Length: 521
Figure (cartoon, rainbow, N blue to C red):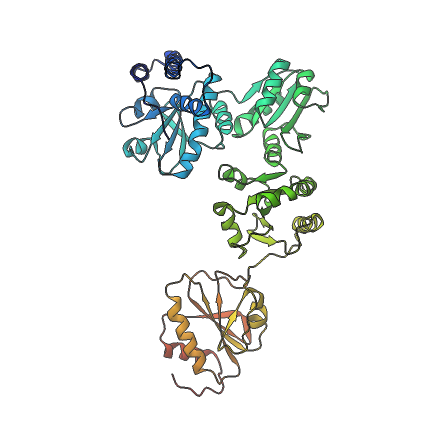
């Protein structure tokens, strides 16, 4: 982050502010901050030759100067000298820190305009490890709210609007009250998603449950009105009753009315199931919120931007049908950080074509649409997912030709036929390409296969567990040797990979009745 060098006047005002903080004169803090910003704006006017409009970079620079820089000398004073302090612990080399920094600065400007009594501060925790330890910053970036010197973790989103909403709620403004059409129109221009509550009076059990829900929710802006005319500005199709709740979003599924009981838990559940768009684009900034969704069935569409644009309308139609049952997520297939970890689970990490996959987070199961991603195919896929009739997907390499192989190559698709359904005994080596000790075990298996070459009832095989899966193959250590006896395939015997070649042969002879063994080890 690049910032202008502060002027002497700026430094003087900042030092004055810190003295105020030191002596806990809390009532004067807001005035000092006003003076600080006023001086900073005056410096900008002088530096820019009296121009009327600042550039985007200058606006960001001004916003960043509102945020107090913490260091070895002022950290305890700032944190303990204010009722509310929101601290961003960062490291200059951390990409996520760089990503959140402008959002944090923009939020500081918005909170200042709203006159929220919150001090925004940031600490280079890499440069200042002592105050970082004092604050409890252990990773980058870290957001912590200090209330009268006591910290609590940040639990909101990471855009500027997310930070503002969370901070307002934590500092005593969980609900925005609108009293005029002008206010309603201004609010509508600013907020992309919110929960509207209309009440004849801002009192009573139903209203108290609404406010309790607003305090408990960390991400959604709650707004309240007591006139139908104002409510209609925000929610045109509102039913003119004494009370009403509804979510508004800036997307095709714009309005969703609430028809449940007015209890905090039910209202929060309604918000959780309806706050996301019909199709949510996964980003680094919203990933935590997406993963925390209570909707356990998720359909992920991996595609490049152009292909996704062509799919969006049909995806929204399908998503509307399964609203609150399935969460639809778009992942840019060209974004390796986001897409590759998911695609690797399906063995499709190199794919550049459209991939439609699904997860049941409640059962840790995964599914893959193996037909063309048309609307009807995606609808059938989702129907079977909801009904629980979709077969879980297990990744597999292509089926190999084992005609001349002394050690058969097993893949996910052939595990049933060549291992479980085979009438023969099978010694299976389970390995991964990155396993350090697997090569030595593989050489032993090849020697054993040569030794037992004349046997008609014993097969030697290997499977790459990094590229192949099967529900009956649950192995976590590599290499692993499993002996599947022809008469008891459900209970394979695990052989020691630390055994010598003769010891392994002895184990095989112990458990199996091997025929026609001629070669000596």
